[in-house]
Length: 167
Image (cartoon, rainbow, N blue to C red; front, side, top):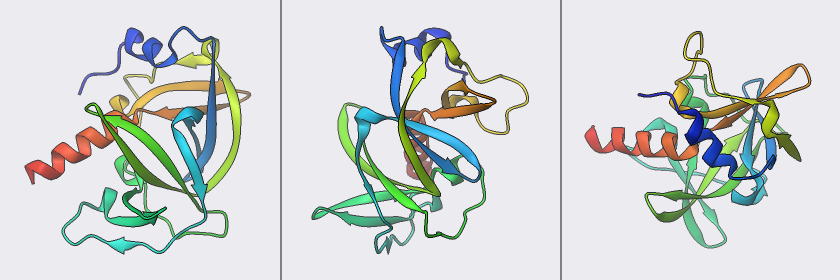
């Protein structure tokens, strides 16, 4: 897959110099979703496994009377699945996948805060040395001594759906 171009990453920021995000942990790494896509943060809910589904989106949950997929994006990034802890949460996010508004639950290890990230601190993922697919990352944003990873959810969900259809 191709690495996102600078123009694609800039388009995600629009004309804004700052981006309001919700930060959370996955396997010791700090990730962030645009705050505007987050519908709700939930305690863990009962899950129903979907026979034959890919492990990445292997179950569904009941969100306000709607059945929505529950994703573990750790698996998309090749991380090991972990057992839930007292801090584990589900972020319900609204994604636009191929022009269709879709609600998805994303399992996290811990949700932190809504914060603002600066466009000036963002960088494209390096093409060499990454342990994850570069097209799954919108950008990295330097915050203090650490980086916040902003995943490209549309790419992750489209690629995983395409892989499931081909199987």
